[in-house]
Image (cartoon, rainbow, N blue to C red; front, side, top):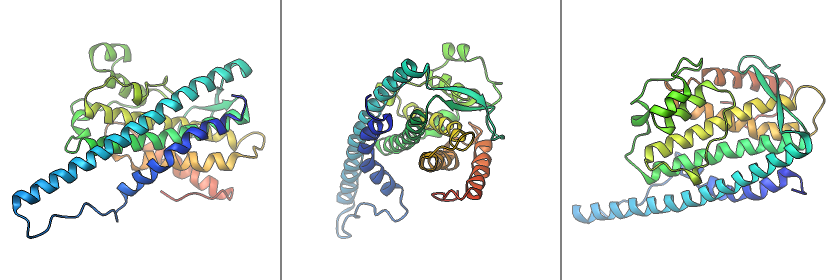
Length: 289
């Protein structure tokens, strides 16, 4: 890693741009669906055409999912090398420090260097966008499957750790259950396996895994922001802040699939308070949510 770690990471992340364009196009309200069969076609022909259109859309989504997982694998390798480098040079990537921006977490990340802080914060934002794109592709590949079906089959887990012990949970239920506990009871859980190496065979479980990956990185992103706006002045703080904050705020605000199962109310309130703080500092926001 002779170059700035951010540059190396962005070399990989740029591969995600066309996928995000396609992802945003799919979510757009103005998105045009496939042309309906001609009115003169028989019902059997119309049904066949609609089936072929659905198959084509799913094949396209599966190919996009393959590309997204390849990008995730490359980013996983970058992160592993990055952490080794930071450990060798500075004794680690960051340390915990008491949060000055109250209302969410007890601590924030005190990074060991500004280049590392910039690279990691941007990286967290990219992982959020990647997780959302993977989730959407999985939904297209498995239309008709309900994510809520698998979540609703077990009781909600609280933020304060009142759920069963994670070791018991992991031993008696699925790996996904253990991940759900980690995501609700821990602030910065250990890294989860990437989607590219996932052994889950259930489409519903894969979709939940993608959402939990996004949630993990959203929380990592929020814990990184304070570093750029407290203590000594950081020249690149605004750039890293804008993309990372918008990505995390968008995720916790829009991922309503998790409502009732993961309590994100504090994150949403904190993001609004932080947005007001940024406006007071004349830091332009991508948008108000």
